[in-house]
Every structure is written in structure tokens, then in C-alpha cells.
Amino acid sequence: MKVGASVKKMCEFCRTVKRRGRVYVLCTANPKHKQRQGISTFAYENIASYVKSERRSEMQGGLGA
Image 1 (cartoon, rainbow, N blue to C red):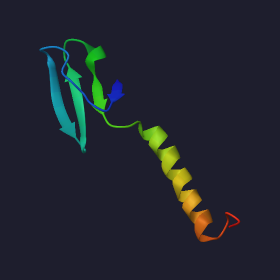
Image 2 (cartoon, one colour; image 1 turned 60 degrees about the horizontal axis):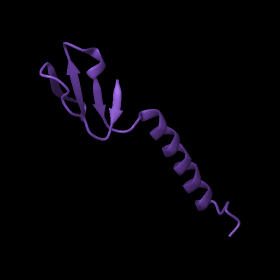
Image 3 (cartoon, one colour; image 1 turned 135 degrees about the vertical axis):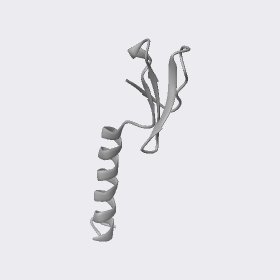
């Protein structure tokens, strides 16, 4: 499955579906045409946890300022 900022139909059999707030392209003819719009969830979780830990250390005065 391709994950990108934008998704487009690649052939006449591709159809656009919106599920759980995400846009998907599903194809009955060619499974390689499967796409999802949005950022990768694994990368986002790592960034989110890093930002939370940075904010926590700032609130405790952990930056040595």
C-alpha cells in the first residue's frame, strides 16, 4: 500500500473510499494501486512521544536555562 499526501485513481477500476477519517483508493483489477492518504502512523507516534517528553522536561526545568 502506498501512503502519500495525495491519492489518485490510476485506472478505471480504482475507487475512492473514506473510512475512519482517511481516504483510501482500492482497486479490484490491480492490487498495486492500493493507496492511503496521510502520514505514516509509526513515524507520527515516535514524533508525538518525543514532543511530549520535551514538553515534560521543559515544565520541570530540565533544560538548564
